Image 1 (cartoon, rainbow, N blue to C red):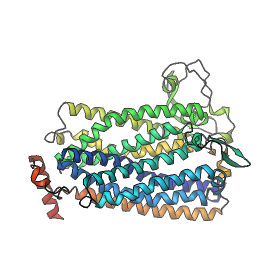
Image 2: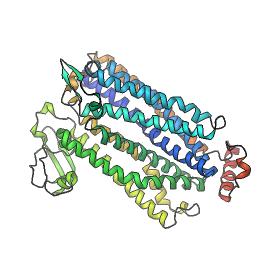
Image 3: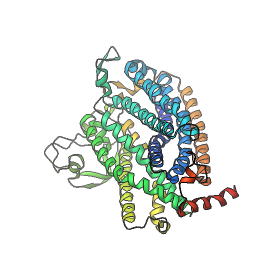
Image 4: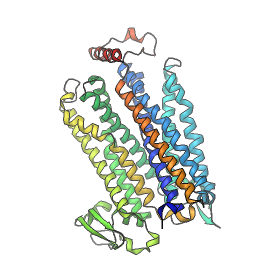
Length: 482
């Protein structure tokens, strides 16, 4: 079959393109919003101007991501009515209301307080401004919650049953609290926070290694590291719990994640595939590197399996995921990045404990700073890889076990879908280039460290430290150049 004449395949490609592009932006806004709450809270508590300038600088990047996230998110949701109308008609009573909650509760809350957070520094009381920042962060993460509720329900539909081709909800709260929900929400929350931390840390390292505002960004790097101490190991643990739920509820996805073709019986050890080259046509791995008896430790922290791990051959070809290699390596990329970021956190923590992250010495840690810069985009790659595993591994189902993807797509001319796919690709490429341009311009300009403090009289009450004086001194030559 010609790829460009298959409406279902083209609709899937279009949704994948819009979803992958859109995911780049809320990942940072949801995590960075929490960082803004932290630094503004520290500013109000300590009256240390450094925290105020941090809040003002990082807010610029937040707004850029927020704007492009809104522009790219709405077309993605509209596709449920254009490209996936049979699916929307079948599950709209629940799925549609959840997406409505995301728009009415989360997005409107975030957007409603965003103006105060951006422009209210000198117009409202500091406590009101801080409340606005908290509401923006809450709204951003509430949006993540509702989206994950909807997607988790697609993975493990519950709270009702299919009747005459429509999903009838019997227990609305059971549908919301579906088996995948809690771990999925936790895993994504930590992913957005971890990604944001390493983006902020990577940008801070770039400034330090280029000898710009070293003391200022050494401060932000330490804030990031203090939070990452808890987030990075917790994310690995929650990721393991998420894999366990796949083991229990989606055995075909687990088999694809492990490129496992033959079943491993309960009560016996099984090898774990570290790297492999899956061959779907011949239903085996052309080559692989395995760790003897490792699968039991990966899944259950013990050698012998308590339950069988089914191989892909247990299901007919039309009832198991395609693109096994993509699922297999996406899972390993996501997991590998998680361990890499945890290792970077440990390395940085040791340097901190040895006193090597002070403003005077941090610039000498060249390799550490370069590694932080390298780590900045890795969180995005891990998140995108995780969603590939989650959604491609769910195939051939749109609603797992209930509605097949081929039956969920709208009956549209393939040429129409191809045209819209090309348009999305062009427009999103332009948006991506614009985001890189404006983001790099924000970073090149750097923080404005001579802004007036928003609390009247505070300048007279707070003695400017030597460090702060150097901030302002470093800033003036840059402004003169501009």
